Image (cartoon, rainbow, N blue to C red; front, top):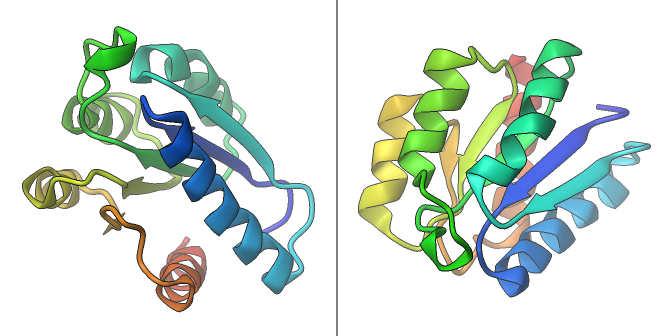
Amino acid sequence: PENLPVVVVDDSSLNRTCVIRALARVQRETGAANWTFHQFETIEQAQPCLREIHDAEKKAVVCLDEQMGSRGGVMTGIQGTKWLLHDLHFKGIVISTSGDPDAGLAHIKLGAHYSWGKPLPKHEQILDDLLTAFAAT
């Protein structure tokens, strides 16, 4: 889709950069225009941006790590997924990018679309997952 906000929440700048590069490659290859990448170290920092996207009724992609305490985050990715999908009723695509497979499974059980883990899946899998998710929304 065009004009897509992408929100990446991870306490590691390297991990955020890797996710953004992978998603920017999908944008380039699909010819989609005007994706806006937002990155945050904690869910608490991301919440105003996520509320704004939700209130504007925009499609979006949100990628969440699990543990963000090293940057002062109180909420975990599981709590963030629950907040997004159950409290905010967020309509975008939610992806767990936690390195903990159990946390990724918990994100899925709460309604996240995918759990990519670390290292990220191969580009073809990321592309296929996003195309599938976009087709369903």
